[in-house]
Length: 253
Length: 253
DNA sequence: GAGTGGTCTAGACCACCTT
DNA sequence: AGGTGGTCTAGACCACTCA
Image 1: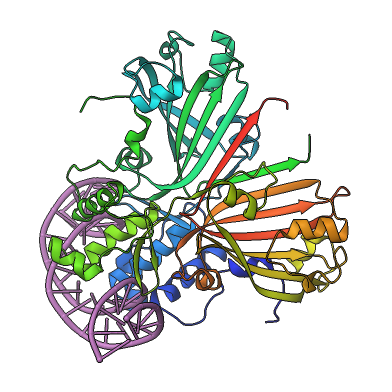
Image 2: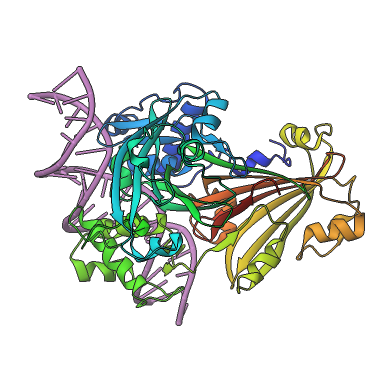
């Protein structure tokens, strides 16, 4: 194979080579996926079945599976099995489109279900963000969002009831920003987005149906109105294989 | 403990609770780190030493360490030991500052070393990006970048020699964009950034001094000039615990 | 109830880093 | 040369999912 400036060469799966046995197993499974023998969403053979093919110990098989999971090629459903990951959706933080919009734009089917509505006193950390006194009651909304029927993120949204009294009595399965704009005349003037890899803690993992500690991506969005008040504080816990970030910028604008 | 709208609750380490033994060990180590008993950069006790404290099997200890690694709290140096991760730097793709600039702005010490300069024929994938014929020779620059002496990313930069003849004879340990601007009168008018979690392959892992397969973040930057030609195509392979992404946007501009 | 992944044990040998 | 993590084995029991 001639050496080329192929940018894929560092991510390719073709690293047959030698090395640890679990990487050889990884390569074999990865090949089946890339050749299309295993479709997105398809279930892999059980760990004990994979053993019979290779003669390896179960721990070695699992190492190969963990590797593929870290790469985003497969995922697991707790105590059910391993499955081929569907393609990730692309998220552009510089655009204003909400989840329902950008997922649909990419030919996928988004869904939202509200799994919690609460009124909780602000901890000191959250009180700082909203510039209210600690203990002030705040709305906390917990939602689970899916793509093509697979849960991909849980989010916890905090809203100051002073800006949106009675918010919790609305149906929250659509765009929250839309509700704030139309019913409460709240305008978002600034948006801050932070992203970092994380491990999904029990609460998030349970909601997504994955094992606690699975790698994930935490996206924190803070929306401000024209006077600089925080309108919406949203923490999204994503499955790490479900999202890609894309930013396109032009000098000046 | 009263229930509050504390946004940290889902990422906290306080999940003492019960559950698997490896999580209890994880919590104990995490606590030592957060209490400051273990400083950033400090070396953890060896796996076999950690065993004596808890009576657990070595595999169980390692599970706890893997968990902490996935969370970005610790990292390993191959066959040397486990270390506490330094704080991550913040990267804002909407700003034009280069690595050397934004790392220094955050009070850290950046460094760059060029580990490869080549002329390679374009593969078909890269040829597409540069809109040249496959096989056209392109510059490929490989650099290793560090923060406070710890390697955090390897990057592979592809440049069309037609835009920058003789580029490889310059010192490339500073800002490449600066060289292109001052010596070749090349202006960057558009920038595209893509990010996704990945597993570090052998080449990248070796350069960073980590085990192959360690989780990482792939950042791909494509720069265009005013006429839409690709000026620079840069693939950055980051340690996943070394980077955070931050975007701040205002409506309209 | 059968099968799955999740957890855990108690060893072993190796390649490599460190001193 | 001694210690470290990296890999691997061959068992075991459990909690849970699924049919």
